Length: 201
Image (tube, rainbow, N blue to C red):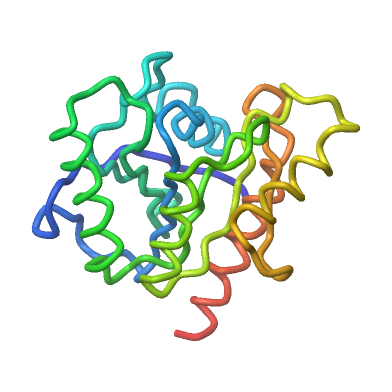
C-alpha cells in the first residue's frame, strides 16, 4: 500500500467523541503498555512522529485516530497491564477499550500486539478472549522481532498460538519497528480488507 497521507485526527474517550464515519473502516491496535504500538504505527505509516512514543509505559492514555489516505482510520487504543499508574486510571483505560469494542460501528479488524520475546501475559490472554467475545477475530502482531535470533522465532510464535489457543487460520505477523520486517505483510492484509469492503459497496 502506498501511504500518501497519514494524519492525526483526534483523541476520544466516549462514543460521542469518535470521528465521523469514513467508509465504515477502522483498524484498531491494542496491546499491553510498552509493547510498541506507537512505534509500529509510526513505522508502518512512514511517519516518525505521527504517534507519540515513550520509554515510559502508559503513554497512550486516550483513543487516538489517524486517517490514512482519506480511506480509513488506524485507531491506537490505550495500553494495558504494566503501566505505572493508579488502579483507577487502569480501570478507566479498560472501560475505554471495552466501550470502543462494543460501540464502534466502523471497526473492521483488531490487531493485538504481543511481545514475541515473552509468553503472553494473563492480561494478553484476557484481552484476546475479550476481543473474541465482542465478535472480532483478532490478528496478532508479534513485536520486537529484532530482539530474537532467527532460529528462536518459530518456537516463540508457536508459544503465542498455544497460550492464546488460536485457530490455525488466524495469522500472526512477526514485526520489527527497527528493521521494518513484517511491515509489508501487515499493509497487504489491511489493503486486502479495504479492497474487499470497497467491492462490497
